[in-house]
Length: 284
Ligand SMILES: [Zn+2]
Image (cartoon, rainbow, N blue to C red; front, side, top):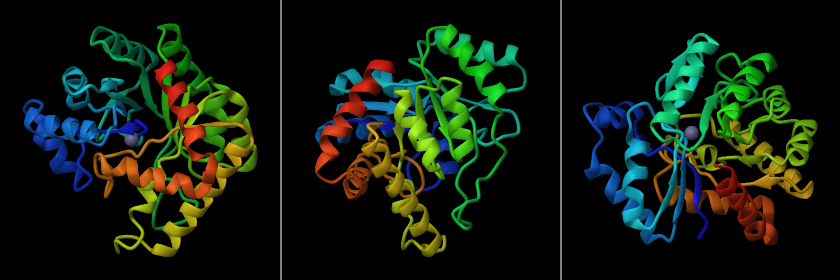
């Protein structure tokens, strides 16, 4: 079984506010331990967290060896003040603030830097991304600071231009990567960066009634096509479910993601995902 290269231990797949509130007065081993035990029971022994400001991922990493799990975490995810991501991460206004956050990740033993550089898909409207993306210049400045401190960069990125800019700025993994055009996919494939398409965050919403299924299906088809194209071009793709996101459950999310990736990758699924995970383990 493959590892899950994008999870959020702090979230539960049901309701983010309640899930976060549970850890607010201190991380809850009674929530974290059963999840780690469940991952281990499924044969999932590698987890990469996308970060949280409440210490859940950090605590999970401390406990993970007891379950035979290798757990990597950025400690908290980092976003520009006023942009998408503040509900779960830490924010900065200036480069000096960002530098201080990177120094804190270092002090707390974080494994890499997670930056939010765009909004999320609007599941009500095909093609629309919430929130303004960072500029190429901003990305370069942030990624250079992280790389200068010896950290790899995991970036939450949606939109063709956002992904292109992130690649140009030297990102190490692209998370979600919705709405890439063929040029962005080709750049990604050539770059050596790893793409974690998190298909299940869309797939598991189909039929739930919260969003129009026609929009969801169109988004999923677009992502599946891009995954297939990326693989054809020799790009690196990793299995990551974004477990904890709405309707993506810890453990099961990895199986759901695998099934969706298989639709795009067919017979080559296992070989491609093994290479993607190898690359994630090496860089992060
Ligand atoms: Zn995430």
